[in-house]
Amino acid sequence: MEQYRCILEGKMSAAEAMQFTLGLDEGEQMIVVTILWLWWLERNRVREGERRKSVEDMAFMCNQYASKYLSICKQNPQPVQATKHVWKRPVQGWVKINSDGAFSSRTGEGGWGVIIRDERGEVMEAADGKLTRLLDAF
Image (cartoon, rainbow, N blue to C red; front, side, top):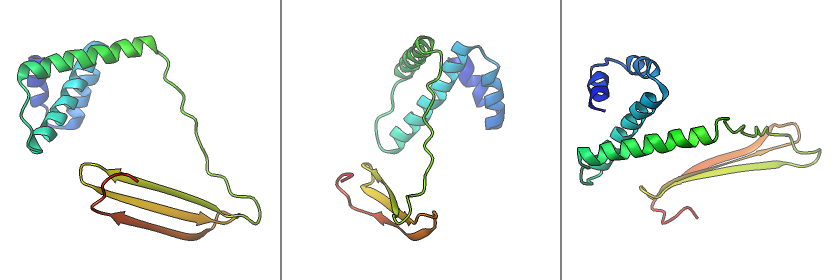
């Protein structure tokens, strides 16, 4: 893994790092991607005041995650096709109300949005908002 770290450290752009990574075989690609992901996670953990993991722990985690992911890919070689949902207008005389929300347990903040459309798909009303000091998603 050290050789990949040294090579990636010398890359001057994300495009160069991706070009290098895509030139590797599947197993090496997975290790490089996992290293980058773990570096990002570790940076966030340390930034939030948590104790830094040892190099040995990071290397162990990288090998475990990469091999596990590759084994899952080999078990399921075909990607699962996602069902595409398309918004449809309500029937004549009805309205359709769509809403969504988000919540971060880390910050205790959330947001919401709602839109009401008529049978022509025209927006009748729309609203959104931000919430703070929340205890949970509900």
